[in-house]
Amino acid sequence: MAAGYLDILRARHAARLLTGTLVGRLPNGTAHIAIVLFTRAEGGSYTLAGALAAVYGLATAVGQPLLGRAVDLYGQPRVQLPASVLSALGMALLAVAGLGSLPLAYAAVALAGVFTPPLEGGLRALWPSVLGSEDRVHRAYAMDAVAQEIMFTVGPLLVTLLVSLWSPAAALLVINTIGVLGALSVILSEPSRSWRSAPREAHWLGALRSRGLLALLGSFFFVGMALGSITVAGVAYADDHGRESVYGWLMAALGLGALIGGAVYGARQWSGPPERRLRVIVALLALGYLPLMLTPGVVAMTVLAAVAGVFLAPAIACSFIVVDRHAPRGTVTEAFSWLVTTFGVGAAAGTAVAGPAVELGGTSWSFAVAGAGGVAALLVLLATGGILAAPGHSAVALRGPEGDRSGAAEPGLSPGHQA
Image (tube, rainbow, N blue to C red; front, top):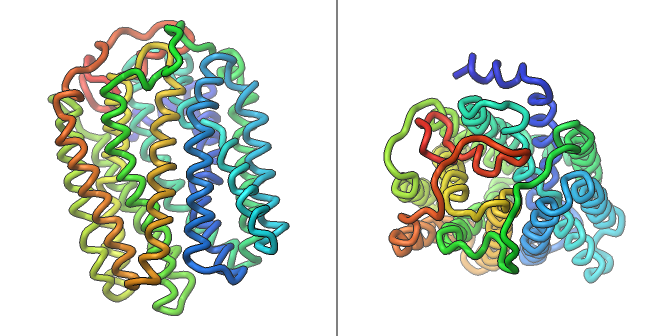
């Protein structure tokens, strides 16, 4: 596994694209944490913190598919560059203006969310032209998943470190400045500038005309809901124990668990339909969220958070395969952007529900929202099993500048299993 990763990183542009994408996505990956901590530091309630984070998530949900479709139509630099700058300006406005004017605060997080650049889908569209062979593309997907979990492990710690050294407002400014620099690194690269999408059928629904994709998105709405609720529940748990640093450790443990799970998942070969495997993984994910309602001591809770994260990365990695199997040709960036959108809407719902849950029933109730989200995600997959069992297309060879169907195989799988 390590040798395969090194082979990919030695390919021209690969390390730059991977690093730039991860750094560029740092503001989005830490936004809910940063917004909640900023709101609490400004004297806002849990409900207000959840509402602001929810607006950010909903705005991201609106912007991602629109920006993703624009990338497929007009290329990456013309869309990603202005989007990354406008998103950072939105967060800067929140940091500078504070909560003195709530309409302005809501407008600021909405601006930041709407223009969050679709870097994740963009990277998956670039791998085929950078790496060439199908095997290397598959390995890149495994490395990509593991690297993302490193970001989600380090990101919360970085936010809490900046908060402790300076302030929540400074954390917002620094994180988003770093994000713009990361996005610029990708956008100015030769693969990003030369990439063009494969031809697509003109249809106003775009990727959403696939019933299988809709079924997957319905399930992952609830996965996003679980994650969004944990953002607020973790802050409440840290407040209960009188230490702000506890929140960062819980979120880092969640990311560390996902990192371990993703590394193990990507290291082995899998057989059988990915849709069936996804149901098993999501069932285990839901099972991992339920014990968080116990809210034991800090050490035990940190362990539970790590266990809860173990099946997150495998669930996401497997969902990438299902997205590719069901998305119409020429909609690669848009299809992955809809997955981001689903997470955004779900996370927004989770934060919006978890805030009042804390105030009505305490910290345990807010973690119960996460457990309920995991169970609901599984129920959706079970209810739509027939739809997901019929992929919209079959795997084909790498071809074309987009390689729309090229990154179709799951890391560690034999050809014919798509990712």
